[in-house]
Amino acid sequence: MDCHGCAFRSCGIANRACDQAKFDRKVPVGVSARHVHVTQSDLEVLYGDRHQLTVFAPLYQPGAFAAKETVTIVGRRMRAIEGVRILGGVRSYSQVEVAPTDAIRLGLDPPIRDSGDLRGAEPITLVGPNGSVHLNEGAIIPSRHVHMTPEEAEGFGVSESDRLKVHMIGERSLVFENIRPKIHSDYVLQMHLDTDDANAAGLRGGEAVELLKVS
Image 1 (spheres, helix red, strand yellow):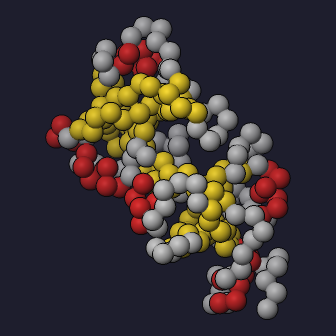
Image 2 (cartoon, rainbow, N blue to C red):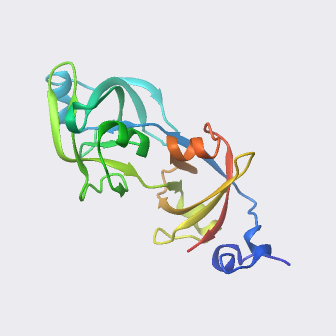
């Protein structure tokens, strides 16, 4: 059966042939460990007046980088994780993104959210060498998402309102659902998973996965 053109739209309806449909283009995986985003004002509380983030390593998306600066994140009952890296550049909001196992360690139950959507986020405290910042709504588990350009989205037949289904290939093969497309002309094609999802599928980052459908 020729599944060309139907893979996104009809493969979820008990059609085993279409469930195996593959695309000409695959998506590389990036594994996102726990990290922090901060505003400039919060950065200065943590690291001192007029402090600027220092690039430790560039990230896949243009302009994004892992900073040399790290903080300790403190959850309920003083449960803490040290050495959590700040990702730059500075943002218009401060937040902490953790995997579910990190949340358990911190005594938290964060909602699954897109970056910047802090509705109902868990309270958490950031501790730096110069001071601390308490975020009343700051900790989330990041939603599964894939970055792509408008041209790539058109080629895959997806829009930002769609939810994707992705097949992880290998000895620990899995299918993940509810993956959000993030579409922008500056993006580089890459899917982001937290460390729990990546470990479940035996992924270390850089592997290719297959988009199977849109729901």
